[in-house]
Length: 135
Ligand SMILES: [Cu+2]
Image 1 (cartoon, protein in one colour):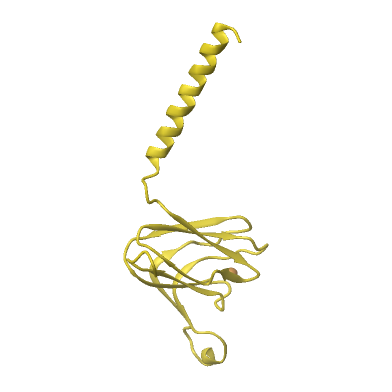
Image 2 (cartoon, rainbow, N blue to C red; image 1 turned 90 degrees about the vertical axis):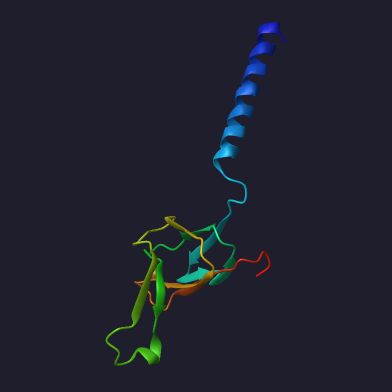
């Protein structure tokens, strides 16, 4: 290797190292992401527990559009005769997203966050935000 070549290699290594360091700085330590898949008209897993500040990301693997709306629904036999069966609580609402689309939200306050899909109200899930490391 020539001396110039070695210098260029060293420079490239330095720049890459600095870049990696800068990238690392952008993501605060403890920045966690948990993914929930939407597949076959189901949220998978449908019930998860995360620590406060975790980013929860839903990814739609179905060919049809879905959304993620926090709140509760009443479905099936229990819904008969009811004029209102969806009860959004306003914590989060994704709007429709299609195949391979994602929606993310970060929940900082411990609690139970039920959610559903507006198009398919039988699709429900819950995110439990618990302060402990071991839910
Ligand atoms: Cu849906």
